[in-house]
Image (cartoon, rainbow, N blue to C red):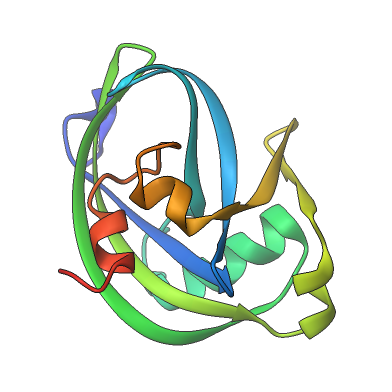
Amino acid sequence: MNNAGGRYPRAKVIGVLQSGNRLLVEEFSGVHSKGFGTYYRPIGGSIEFGEKSEDALLREFEEELQVKVEIKNYMGCIENIFSINEQRGHEILQVYGVEFSEKENYAKEKFEILEGGQSSFANWVNLADFIDGVKILYPDSLVCKLEGGN
């Protein structure tokens, strides 16, 4: 079975990396489920066939940020149905709390992400900005998990 045309949910993993009241997230811009503009998402990506979600997450941080992380805890699973640039998406996300293996990485303000010949950035954003709705964090229900809900 293949996922031609995006007719099936994709298996993905994200890592919640916090430093005090800050969350490390990748920044995006465009048309999304809540309108147009800037939105954010934790670091992560697709789980490859035959790969455990934990291994995929460690691989994604190494590939995208060139850093090693350690998994602290499993935070749960989120089913996310969304739209980006008028394309509908559906993903099943495994969510883990992670921390940097090398503590000096917490002092960096910005991380360059290199993926598929494209360059973007991950920044630290105050968690309160997401909780208060000042900034948009995807997947939607992640804010609730970060506040201690389900």
